[in-house]
Image 1: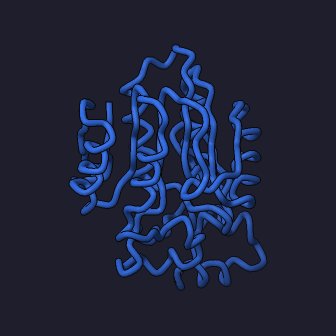
Image 2: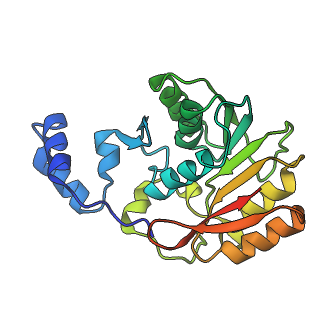
Length: 237
């Protein structure tokens, strides 16, 4: 999963502008698997610009599509409370805050990631509250209307693209064949939100749906596909 980005002519132009004296060296780094997004320093995500470095996972198209699906399911003008778990760069919380009237909170265990997220909120002129928390251990005390999460979901034995070795491994891999975060999140939620939205691994849908049924037996639970036709999202409504 997470295929390495192919260099485009625009990528090469941007690299040459940013690294005029070391351009060939940077091209070789990318060809050897180093993410060009870290070299360029930012990525577009919906209608926001997100700064990235090696402290945060690089936002993917799959996650962008998750946010689009969330926005299509909610009344954007309502004053709702939204929680983004495992926020990383803050891209989900920031994109939702930018496109709604929601009060958004982003939570992550990584302090360096939270510093990037705070910088991204300022860059995009949105107010998002960011908190440091370990959701595998700490309690979610407040009640939220919407909960969105793109947690680590790769099992430790699963193959991944070579370029992911430069990204924070704690943002990628998880115990229990990648299911531990979903189980802990569902156990931790105190109320019944209007919407819970997960990005999931393509083979995890049934297992996570069973976990969701145990916690919210009366909810409508659906698994949706990404643009590649793979099971990638689970919604609890």
